[in-house]
Length: 263
Image (cartoon, rainbow, N blue to C red; front, side, top):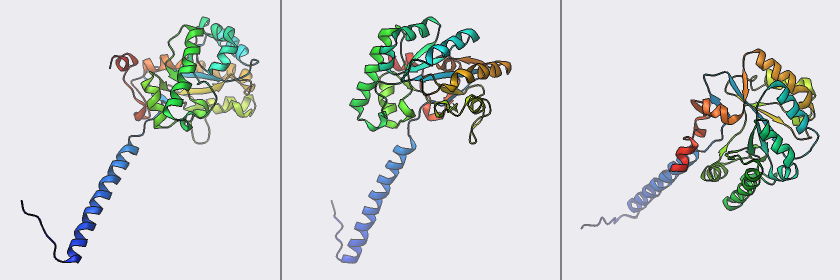
């Protein structure tokens, strides 16, 4: 084997700089590749039906949930309720009514903290604590998660997927928690925010049934009536996903849960 010996320092230094540049560029490409493959939650679905996902978050309060359930029952509409486990433990009767009325129960975590600020082990404990509580109360298989405040990153989604959860966000925001008044909540859903659009097939609508959103009680009947008048069908997220050819954004697409469990 012959070794190349550089007798001139300038030539040797040039070669060393070339090697260093190659290493830096290779590292940069790997970093870009990692971050371009960022995992995403589900914001909406691509459907050929007229279905729209209807969702409610609850983390505290006891005045708003029951009137919301009464409205949904009167209108014959089913929805997904993302519940925090402390609230569910304190209000088992309301959770059991949700199940009896045909609604889907999903997880809103345990503590109301930004899960993406926690370590993978802490995230797993938060998810599984809520999982055990919700599954015990409902008897349902819990497989959808909406993280508190919608805060997520690759770490959160990766841990969630490993635990059999699909992370769900929203594409239409009622902003009911800001208490803008019932008319504003109705406009936000039907007409959309300035940078969005009104609810249409494949969308996932975010409402709150916590006591922080009293306007929802007056706004919800109008929203339901207006969307049904457009021949839209309001459904739980689980049903929307079953009807979906794919979800948006593309990075949110997962194989069916039964395939992930078998792998």
